[in-house]
Image (cartoon, rainbow, N blue to C red):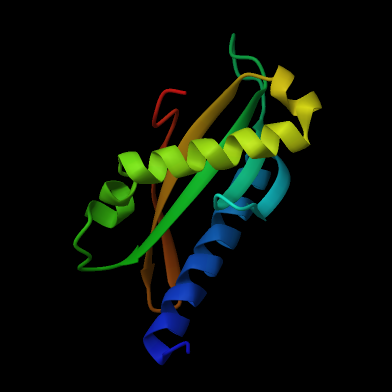
Length: 133
């Protein structure tokens, strides 16, 4: 059963993911999948980051963490622990197995932290390549 508190949390998470998707799209990223899931878990966003300077286009698995003010885990940063990283890596491997043509691109994992304050969302930080593959 979903409690009102759970509902607000799910709403914040989905709103944050949509906010990040819009921001990435406006920055020239090609959004491929939102909430792609398999038996290991879910990828919030799978996108192709544009080539910048000498960096080639990259396939990026974007994890979005949304928190309200006064959270206990550094705005979601501490939630990306070793167990979560392993789960994301397994999920990404299954994604690449399903879409082998994308496996030719350089891949990385990014983390975007979002704070929700009422109806407003604030993009706090976009961390690139948050863990090595």
